Amino acid sequence: MLLLALLILLAATLLAWKWQGNHWRRLGLEAPFGWPLVGNMLDFALARRSYGEVYQHIYAQNRGLRYVGFYRLFNEPAILVRDQELLRRILVGSNFADCADNAVYVDQQRDVLASHNPFIANGHRWRILRADLVPLFTPSRVRQTLPHVAKACQLLRDQLPPGRCEAKDLATRYTLQVVASAIFGLDAQCLGRRRRLAPPSRWLEWLAPLFQPSAWSLLETVSLLHSPRLAGLIGHRYVPLHLQQWFSELVAARSAGDNLLQWLAASKRGLGQQELAGHATTLLLEGYETSAMLLAFVLYELARNEEAQQRLHMELDEVARRHAGKLIEQVALGELRYGEAALLEALRLHPAMQALQKRCTKSFTLPAQKSGASSVLNVDVGTVLVVPVQAIHLDPQLYPAPHQFRPDRFLDQPPMGCRFLGFGAGPRMCPGMRLGLLQTKAALATLLQEHCVLLADEDECGVEVSPRTFLTASSKGIWLRFQRRTPLY
Ligand code: HEM
Image 1 (cartoon, rainbow, N blue to C red):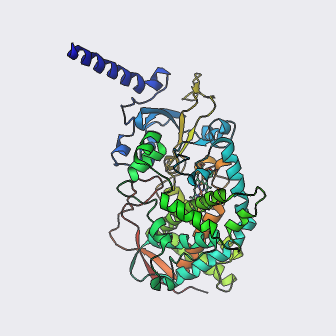
Image 2: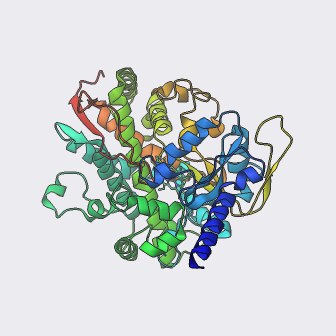
Image 3: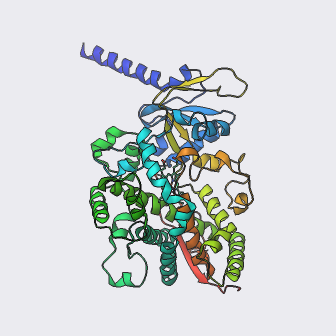
């Protein structure tokens, strides 16, 4: 009797799995079978490939389709969008309002400060929080952050280490130095001579490891992107408790001055102490890691591509000649067009977010999966739509020789539309893009004005991207060497 009950239970489970794994096929889509628990993301679950690589594989295997039905972790049916026109509709156009929410799970009680981040907030609350931050990033406001950037560049110049150096570590020290100064008006002591005398910088100790691979990072990424239940089980916090307390203290003790926190405090909406702490947390966390990774990757690509580095050196020399050797000022930085193109090209090859994941909040219709066919797909509320940024950036039909570093792709080009999504697109696009580009360009100019950058090891065979992290990170670091050069001006 017990055996019969077990057999019936087993048969029912298998049928339920089969039913779930054929969700898209039942709706008439071309789609792979979804396996229990892992869906089509086994390699990500086993930390063999990053989630961006898994999506890239699905994207590449389905040429000719506008979108693909597939299954995320926990066998959740989702749609991966391939077609440029559909991407535009979803990110920028008529369907934006139907799927404007980011599919990330953060518990508002456990993560009080992170829940103020527009990236995490949804619906009407997102609109309000984003509207608080956008005025900080107008061209004139970003120009006002230049003194903070220039001060950090001076420290960076004085501190270039002799011999091998890990580029991501150097870049993180620099961006932390910039954001601590620009947001709070504080010296984070991550760079410079005083650092050697002072106790280890808390900024460096607490913030530098935050988005890096660790024993826990795969579980944390899965919690953030796939499972609020797992997040509850492991007590995951996007902003760990000690950082929440420290940020709140920093905000409470803030001093007057020309910095982002003061501009926020003076905003018309009259922000409370907790809202200020929430916004400061957003600016800090969004402000340093993505820019540091971009700076490290552009140095790496230039080290591997001698011709591109020579062109950048020529541009740096020409612009420096026109500006009496001074590059870290508004007009000179604006003239570094090849430098900016190199940054965008590095971001194309190594996007900070390998995919954007949006959740449908109002049912809408997608056209047929194949052009020419007449059937349509009704997208249900709750369905996740994946925008596979890394796959799009490396699609040979959109970028010839997609793995080659060619900054020219970004020179004198019409708008890229949804071919380039390094900062997202549409109403949810990164509001800090100008500041991100300003601080990375200034550091690039500072480092390469009087130096060449080289790979630390001749037999370097590429950066290994961590399969465990939410933001793109390298598993073993990015090892480079700087060699003095004589500028021609
Ligand atoms: C090179 C540096 C940076 C890169 C590559 C980058 C990239 C991105 C990307 C891909 C998104 C998601 C867009 C989407 O969902 O469609 C985003 C959102 C965001 N970024 Fe950045 N970012 C950078 C720098 C910054 C800086 C410096 C700040 C502020 C100090 C910032 C603040 C934000 C915020 C607040 C959001 C959420 C926007 C929303 O959902 O409305 N970012 N960023």
